Length: 331
Image 1 (cartoon, rainbow, N blue to C red):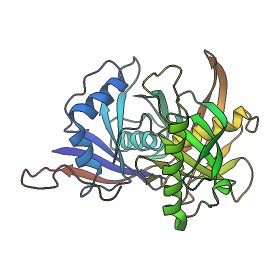
Image 2: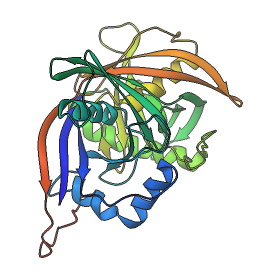
Image 3: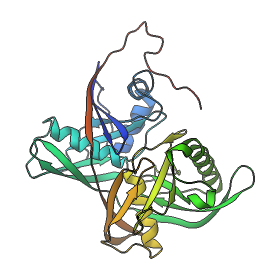
Image 4: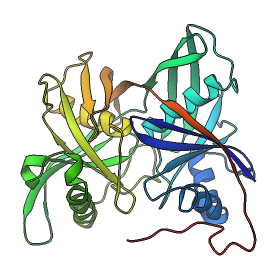
C-alpha cells in the first residue's frame, strides 16, 4: 500500500508519496533516482499513471537527505520519467509537510531544505494560522547555456531558440516565432511544437551541466510570449515528458527564463518577474545574486508560489488487476 498526499500548485498536480516506497540506496539523489528507475519504476507508474493518475500528473518520493542540514531528499516522478528538479513540486511538498504537521511549522515561517538530483533547494513558507499562505523557493544555480541556436522543425521551418538551465535544461522559444499563442485552446498545438523542438535541439547539440555530469539532455521546452499586463514577465507553456503540458507557471521554467533574460541584459538582479501559466496562474520570481562556477556565469533564482492539498490517498495493488502498475494511452 502506498500512502500519498495529493496537492496542486498553479493547477499542476503533485502526488507526494509519504510511505510504502522501499528505501532508495545511493550516496547522491541522482544515484537514488537511477536506482528507482532501474529497480522500482513500477511504483512510479502505479502512482501517477492511469487509472490512479493521468499522463500529465507529477509526483515526488521523499527520502532521507544526503547533505547535512537538509530535511528530506526528493526524487521527482512523472508519467514517463524522472525530472531532476520540479519547482512547483517543492511548493507542494513544503505546503503538505507543514499543513499536515509532518514537520511542525514555526510561525510565521517554516523553512525547509530539500536535496534533489539537481542540487539543494530551500523552501521558506509563510504560515498564517494552520495554513501555508505561500512558499518562497530558493532554487539551484541557473544559467544561460546557449543563445541564438537555430533548429529546423518538421516541414523545414527554422526557429531560433535559447537553451537555459533552471533545475532542468530548457529550450526556450518565442511563441510568435512559432506562429502560436499561449492559450488553453492551443494546448494540442503547443504540445506538438514542444515535442518537435526538443527533438530538434537534442539532435543538433549536446548539453552538459558544469557540476552535475548526469544532466546531459534538454528535457523541457518553454514557449513564451509577452504578458498581457506588460512589465517584466512572461506567459508560458512548458512541455515535458512525452507530450505533457504544465498547468503551472513552472518553477524551473521561471528560473530558466529569468537566467536567460539576465544574461541578455534584460532582467537586472532584484527586479520582480511575473511568470504566468497557460491557465493564468502566476509565480513571482527574482534573481538575488550572480557568481561564477568555473567558466559559467550563474544566478540564484527565487520564486514564490502557492499550493493546496486536494486529498489523502491510500493506493492498493490487487494482484488480479491487469492494470495494477498503471498504463498510458497515446504517444
